[in-house]
Every structure is written in C-alpha cells, then in structure tokens.
Image (cartoon, rainbow, N blue to C red; front, top):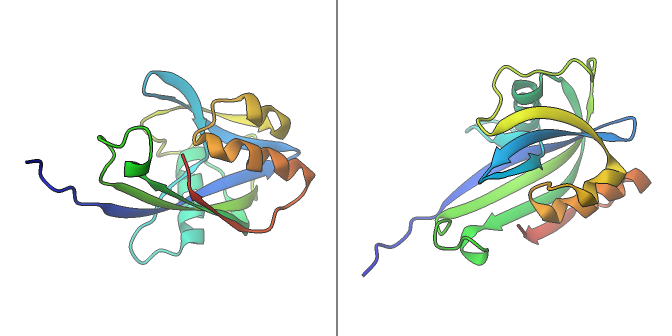
Length: 159
C-alpha cells in the first residue's frame, strides 16, 4: 500500500512586464527543453502578492516595476495533469499581474536568478503563440494583450 500524499498549496506571483509591444521572459532550460517562463515566484508569509511580484521581478531581472493590474489567477493541481504520479503533492495558485518597468528596461540582470534561468529576453507579443512559453495556456492570453487589457479572470486548473 502506498503512502498517502500530503498536498502543499504554494502561492506565487508572476509578472507580465510590457514595454513597447514587448514582454519580458525568462529563457530557461527545463526537463531537457529550451523554454520560457514569466518572471515571478513564491510568496513569503506576511507578504502581499503585489509585493511578491515586485520583489521576484527585481531579484530575477534587475528591473523595478509598477504593478498595474491583476490579469489572471491560475491554479495548477498536479494530480490533474500529465505528470500526476510525480506531482501528486503539487498545488500552485498564481496571481499574474500586468507590470511596467520604472527603470531602464534594457539594463537587465537580477541578483538572484532562478536555477533554470539561462537569460532574459524582450519578445514581441505576436511571437508568443509560437514560443515554448510555459505554461502553454498563457501564450494566447498574453499575446492578446497587444489588443488591449482583458477583464481579470480565473483561468482555472491549467498547465
């Protein structure tokens, strides 16, 4: 008989940083593939999610940002997705914020990059659908920001 899995809920904030029709992405190497992620990360106890977004962006990219708006709330419940066996204890809740840089957007280089991070790239919004941006479910909504802000939305349990 297998041991029961203890599920831990982790809250995080991610940033969609826009500048001149471009979005800032972290280039990464993950599970043998080149991919991209939004900057952001885990919330600390007692920290507001907007503060998490600002802190994580500064650590990973060197940018200071103004958090403008909550775009989406996303969940990822591991048992419902492709790697259910290995991610049975995973439950993430991510607040995804629209942000704008408040310092020079071309002076990149954070002091605490993620272990998987291989670089930072400004990418045109219309290129997102063809990129290996993870999670894939964000490619379309982020690309659509080229046409205006969406209403804030709950994206659900998506990978």
